[in-house]
Length: 223
Ligand SMILES: Nc1ncnc2c1ncn2[C@@H]1O[C@H](COP(=O)(O)OP(=O)(O)OP(=O)(O)O)[C@@H](O)[C@H]1O
Ligand SMILES: [Mg+2]
Image (cartoon, rainbow, N blue to C red; front, side):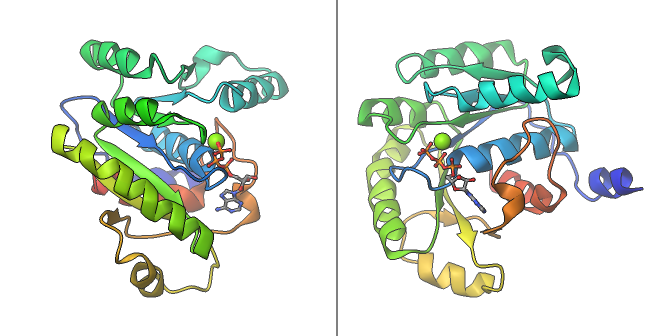
């Protein structure tokens, strides 16, 4: 019963080409990895063919997946793939994957330490960049700078959407208030936010979190 509610409440959009959504922020710990995983499992659950790519050489995602597979006694090929890449080759890899059209959506979790060059190249190959931010003064300052740095990429890649995903927001905060705080950023604001919740502290790379489904839907709608 839970499963039918889960999948029928969201409509899958038919994309004629592979769409690339990249999580980028100059702020370490802003929620890129957490949201990349939750978005991937949610979109996979809705029925999209998903590839999740990490450019962080800590290989957090690959390791988490391996651990989960081990605990569940399952095999890698039973689930959507996770690929390890690096800043200097991610753009080329995306180009090749686009040509093959094997996936509806590629989600890239970039590292906090990604260089300017790495960020630029990734932006040129992305359809959407999601910048995760909390509403603390420090996060907002870094987010403001991240958006400023990414804006020139829109001149070259005309289809690129820069979107802010408010993350770790107190769950009683009104969306209107969140948008008010972020309104001066030259980027679109995703029409919802991700609350600060324990369920998001160790996300599964396999099982989708029901509460994230609306967030995934709002992100996809803005593609
Ligand atoms: N919505 C949330 N609710 C609760 N905890 C969160 C939420 N989002 C992120 N966190 C926690 O904040 C920490 C940093 O998150 P995460 O690793 O996703 O950030 P990151 O941007 O990928 O960091 P880095 O730049 O180091 O790659 C993690 O411990 C994570 O569990
Ligand atoms: Mg990360």
